Length: 93
Image (cartoon, rainbow, N blue to C red; front, side):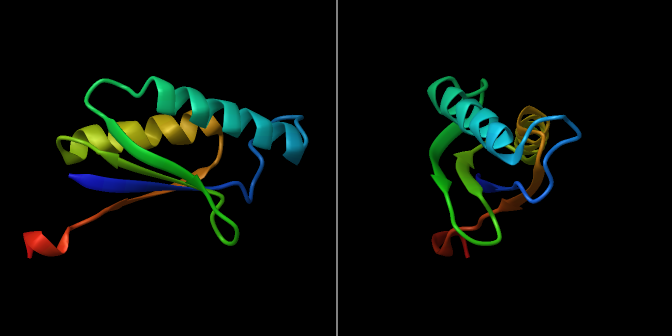
C-alpha cells in the first residue's frame, strides 16, 4: 500500500529555535529516516518541494495502521504539521 506524508513547516514547533534551525533539524531527521526506516516501512523516496508543502515522503506500508503510526511518528519527529494520503495505482482500479 503506497502512501505519502506531506510535511509543512509553516509553523515552527513550539520551541525557541529559528526557522533555519528548525529546517536543519527536519533535514537531519529525514536523512536519518531514509537510512534507517522503521520496521515494516519501505521508503521509496523523500523529496523537498517549493510551495505549499516543504517535504514529501513516498512510502509503502503493509496496512493503514502501520502507515498511520509512521505518519504520526514523522509529525512528532519533525515537530511540523503533516498530512497523510494513501495512493491507489491505476492498475488497482
